Image 1 (cartoon, protein in one colour):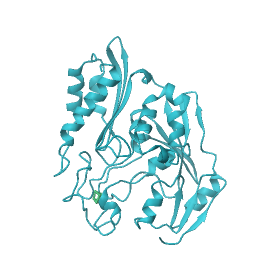
Image 2: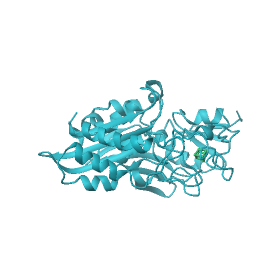
Image 3: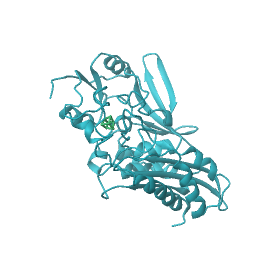
Image 4: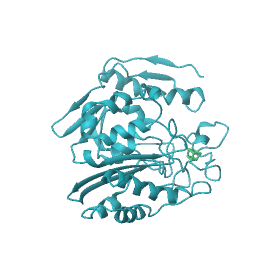
Length: 326
Ligand code: SF4
């Protein structure tokens, strides 16, 4: 591993100054970054350890809940307010990684984790995300885990997070600090599609820091569900996952939120299917139609075409669970 400098700022301003230097990278839980460094996928000159910043708080606001970016995944998943107001987020967090990793991983780090495409981690293989312009090993390779939505001819990788799928479905907002002040962006606009620059995963600038996420209050707590389909029951990334949340009145859907994981370079919100469900009675027939609608534009590759069937089946199943039909 290349030698690097290490610094541990005690204030946000010191952290922002440190990360704006060339070759600097933030480290929090380190559950992904350390692997990437060991394998030579990334080689920062300087690590900026932000663990001493006061960003671990989980506090109610007048419109919802604020979760600090350094809150641990395990702590968030067991937080009383999260369990009571946003159980979908708790379910998504508990579906991710392993208990040991969730005890180290932070909310901000979870958002910043890189794809688990095996070609990205294998420095002997071409990969436009690791080394722009070298090609994509997965395009004609073993692409069983890869995307079916929003791909480009540069990259077909997926975002590996479960937590992010839950936060995208819950209309969360990302709070970002920069040297010129704070800005807020909808969670669904934080990650980006690969297009011509798969090396860029999200819209966070190099000199910015995620300081938290806010989830607005809603009426989804009673009828929400996170369903993750994977090769084994724990410590595996999603083949397809679905976050489903419904606001139901007398058997009729007033509002719906749907997002998928394991299918795109970002958490994939199903806006058209959500709209279509409004005013519909809860029924498997309606859920199946919404699921089919959500598949518009999907494209399979040699080894992942099974996702074209698995994804709608998972949406239907998640909606049935959320609605209490199973
Ligand atoms: Fe690299 Fe993306 Fe291709 Fe994977 S899918 S090899 S991450 S360019």
